[in-house]
Image 1: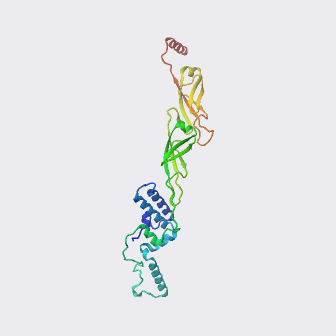
Image 2: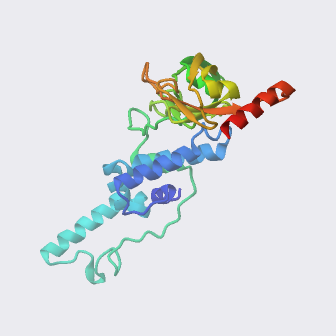
Image 3: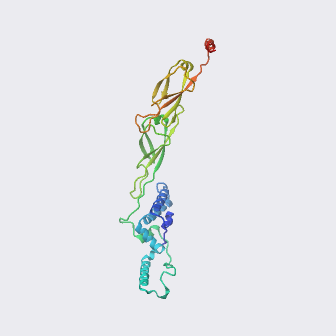
Length: 310
């Protein structure tokens, strides 16, 4: 059976560090994980090869043996005995192999010219390292993470509530805390894919998609809105009612309020995420509405006002 290059399987150099091996393994294992490639036999085989390569190269003793014998793994013991004989002969000043020099050729490396029959990948491993059955160490791998998106209205994000949704056929009920932001990710530990060889489950990451509200613009924990006020209230002062997420609010309008003037209502904005009782501010811009369909008497009164100003 053919020699298998475990370094090539993981796409790394022979000088790769333990950390390099771990990173390469995790990257490839995620790519070819059975949960990511269901019913794909080629990906499954590739995943098995990656796990096997990692099992050898991540184990210092196995990697040492693998590197020592290399392509000549089938004749590893013969190679090792010949090396020892040569070292003993050199130390005693003689050469048990005659004038032909050393048994490894002029370059000092043993060369095997026999032919290997093709075989299964796992057979190569078991013949070189022994069967993995019966308590051999196996690599564990954390399960794949899942990602989902949950869409909420801005008003829903204003209050703490529960949401139920399905992922991979599984119904999940979670609590959404007031003040959650658009694009915010919530992590549910252990709700991802099953681990390999007893490894831990992956996690579930839920990205919040908060739809904007045309009446209330959110900026951080502050809210911005506008309020229509009739001309007479703006000039003389009075009260106006504003509908908010928290209910109706009565506002005192100062006399001679100008169009576009802004009022700040402290603590009437959006709730602060996971901070009970804390809110941002609400900014209200006054929009003075001009009266229409004036009667002759009303026009006459406005004319009198105009004359008084002049």
